[in-house]
Structures are given as structure tokens and as C-alpha cells.
Image 1 (cartoon, rainbow, N blue to C red):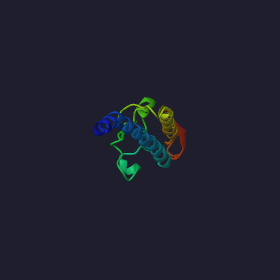
Image 2 (cartoon, rainbow, N blue to C red):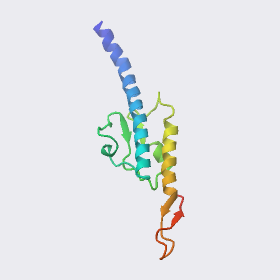
Image 3 (tube, rainbow, N blue to C red):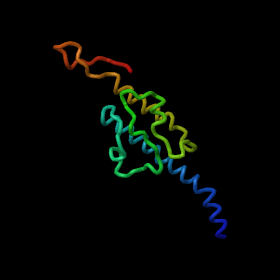
Length: 127
């Protein structure tokens, strides 16, 4: 009986942990998206800017990402479950692409001077 319980825990334990990690990662992607919108395109520098608790045992976040120069591939790989793979969260790629589009939209227009007398003009710049 005890051997069966140990065997079940050994077989299903990692799968359950990975499922929880993917669930947590989905929430982190949403939280980063909210942070990006609320800060007009800034990227969080730490867990403290996102949540009161550190979720790094479940999710990996690249807090060093530069939102001004990040490529789509960099954003796609910037947030992931610790396992590095998604099994039960197939829409992760689309959610991360949406996050990239949000970053891209916030950097399309930057405030740059066009002349000495017009220091606040908006010029569309695409990176």
C-alpha cells in the first residue's frame, strides 16, 4: 500500500508540479501585460514590481529584458515555466505575442524634439 502511494507520487508528482507551474506562468504573463500597460511600456525589474510573492520556483522571468529593443523572439522566451515547456497551456505563445505587440505599440511613438522650438512633438518611430 505504501509502496503504491510512493510510486504514484513519483510518477504523478512532477506532472502535477508542471501543471501548477504552467498555471502560475499564465498568471505571470497576465501580470506582466498589466504592468506593461500601466507603466506605458516599461518591463518589470523584479518580482516585487509584479506581486508581493516570489513565484520563481514555478516561473522564470527575464527581468533584464529591455522593452525598447526587445525582439518578438526575446519576448516569447522571456517568461516560461521552470520546466521550459508548455504542455497544458497551449495559448502561451499567443499571449506572449500579444505582450510583444503591446510593447511594440508603446514604443511606436516616442517624444522627440523636431526643432529647437518644438521640444514636445510626437514623431512615429518604429524599431
